[in-house]
Length: 292
Figure 1 (cartoon, rainbow, N blue to C red):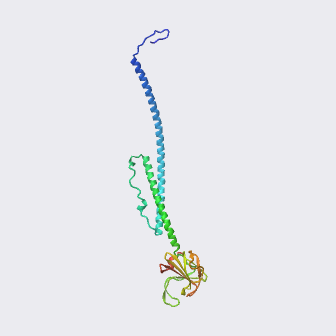
Figure 2: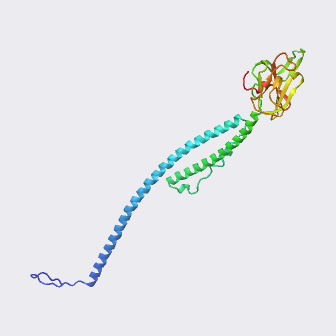
Figure 3: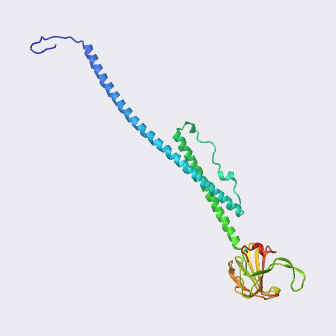
């Protein structure tokens, strides 16, 4: 029933119950639909913002990975330089070489089975990880090889320290190694050393590290010192005027062992210097690295 104001006439309207229920249901559905559509819209807006943020982060990561890969390229170049230096050291000092296959440590081969299904950023990350792992293994290997070289060179240095390699005295080379006419007999004889002439009292030094093996008067050689250097090397210093060391004394290269003289059979003051290796006399000039 519809009742208007005081001037109107009251009217009665009949509405079916089904229509009321239907209208109520439609209103309810519209409210629910509006709620879900609003929620979906808000969710989509949030998702788009999150997706944009993730894409920006992914782009930054891609750029950083690319920078890392450039840095790794530089590291690899420096590593190759170190390898070349190590090879040069082994060549110079005649040390055992390492073949290229051993240096690669079996790196390479098939990649991850999931690689084809990876996103571009995941592929870059995977490739970077593989490269880092490779360089870490190679650098560890090279470090171990440098330690081997260091140990070998230390042994080599000890050998060099005990190898005659300097002049035993200052002066003039008056006679070399080899066959010569004996100044006293005129016959051809073998001169097993070199003669260095200078004034009496000129210092005579050991030409390498070693131990004084013999010291004293020895026939035509006069006052003579014999030093055992190890590694098959022995040096002898004859015609001395004075000894400054004792038998059994350890000697360092460059240490004064005596003074030049003319003891024994000589034509004047000089030092007769010999180098023996494994029981054979060698030309001392082949072992002298400094000049007269």
